[in-house]
Length: 459
Image (cartoon, rainbow, N blue to C red; front, top):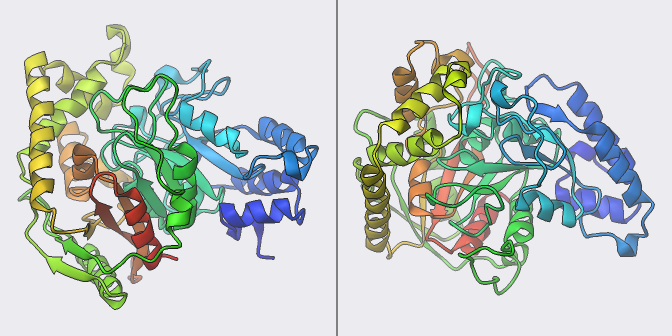
């Protein structure tokens, strides 16, 4: 058998069920790797709790265990966990201990998964890179001098460094797919509303959803099967799929028509040679398995970006932070907090209306296509200091747009999207080879189709 950390969740579950390895041995193996980690992946490690849960599973008959009993995972530190510190990457919440689990955490534990702790995230998940005043940056395993991306950077680093087979993340503007690209793992964002945000994170703006960072597409489908169950009391729910998402992977999609573009929707941003090479490689792979790929102009209008900023900043401004504590926030967080406070209620309503009507119109115009191919990011993983070295949050924001001009569009539209690690940029004199993700998206609700397509490219 391969080393335990080389197995995905399906393989680990099979090894545990066959009694080739105990749950305690599995948990200890991964905890030992975490204790030696230098990538800034975890903020809080729950070793004693995890080992105690693993021992309980070992004492339970195989036939009475949940399917994935004893398989380790990790939870992003934005996500509430009952009795476990949840800092949200902020010194203001350094000792915050929630009394309730997020619904996603509850569902994962019902399926038998055992959490090993909370992964690194930027303050309140606001940036596309991961750094904070709690433990510092998350580092991509490919080159620790470069950032893991954000805001699920710790989760992606944990999976990329094989500290856990999978991790929960969340995505409001690309926060699963960005670090997946930087760390060379799979990052899947489902359709809007497919996963409940409950009980404490309302889907008021339609942007944010939970999702998974995994080594394999089949594990991404597995997590979606676990999480795609409405929380009692949810008012907007998807019907139960006709078959499990994992089952859909066994069905090879019929030849699809896939639109592709590489030019970002913002005029001052360009795709790097590495991003272009990654998309060209993915296009060849798609055509080799029978799909038709059609190059089109970027269909998204640049006017979406300022409207997204109004909605994004309003969410931060609504946080109940007393005025005397604002100065303790990081400069980037203060920037969004103050910017959001400047927007009026009519401006917020207009921004949300513009985003919904515009994205709906764009998708209607793209109905002849089954899926969409773009870069995940415009740039390779960047050095930690690149994002903030100017000391000016406005410049920080501009650089984030240079870095990630593709991902937030899928949050505005509600489409399912996945970043796949299909390409590495060659090593150079001053750096090693770096992972460069590509993004596939589908129409809203076509999660199964998207996962099946992703499986074709990354089996």
